[in-house]
Length: 434
Image 1 (cartoon, rainbow, N blue to C red):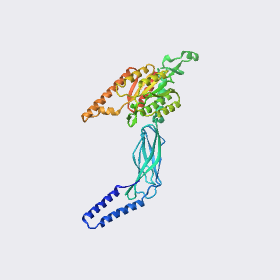
Image 2 (spheres, rainbow, N blue to C red):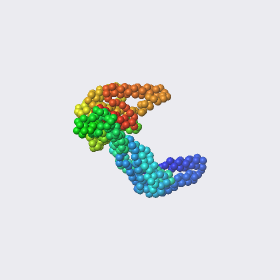
Image 3 (cartoon, one colour):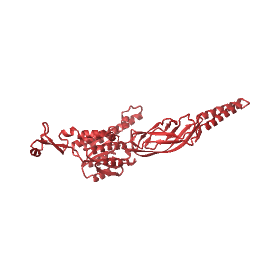
Image 4 (cartoon, rainbow, N blue to C red):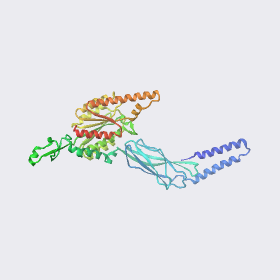
């Protein structure tokens, strides 16, 4: 595709002005003809001396996988260029729903090192950029060329496990569960670990008198927290989870925190499972142990779609109550709009809490807090601030009611959610609440 550039249009306007002046005031049109002849000669020379783009091709190198919420470099390289290059070509990218980045990109001229394009992963899934539009100017800048190039760039966006890969979870869990604190302090566990020589300062109640008599020396029992507990993650997949915080849907923040906690549970010797629900139960993976369970959990989370249906807590919690026979730690990732819509959730969570240990985790909405705390400049701002403050107060009341019935409930910012969950899990494990 070829179209005239603003420069050529400007020359044409100038030639038209000379023509109008010559017709109005002069008996001869020689100057106007000369102007048009000059414009035509320049245009023809520009067309003949510029690259037409028939052999122009674009190659792309993209990261095969990105973690949700993170960015990677897309490298575009121009090939097959023939002719002189005076203006750097550019391209226009049309991103799918799961990716974002700069729409208009200036490419490196042939022979120059390629310039990477920063692409950010917004949603899980397999995303494809099928084609791009190339644009470049002719040598004299009188024409603009356009060409559609098929590239079929494929990028897979997976659940974010950056904290697991970095070893941050390993350090936190191993320090808490296998450090000196777990072996020395009394009351840290009820499962027998090993015998040790009794020393002054140790709790006399830990002396094993039978073994001491047999070995003719005082031996004490070392206890540790019981392992092999069941941890089930109940993940709400309803329409409220599609709301974005920091450019990422809530459910992806929850999945990242869930996988970090699942890895911590596996390191702690527990078993992990997943229950996803919305209007009906979507997926149930019973708790399993070992590192293979983490891979299965990550794969199941990656397959969850973004749905626009309302969550039915009654069906979901009743289904979960029937499937869970053993006392377990159930971590519920969900949200609610106000206290009225949270009534059914409260009733069903309270029923489940009679047999299991329930942790209810929600994300704090920074936009809601900004509306409530912002300085109003008009009556509309005042009305929005009052409404936001009312919503925040109702959310606080719901969390207080959950706490009163014995549920460990909290809301946290997206960057603090994983740390809060990990701290809660270690506390529950140390106190042997499960």
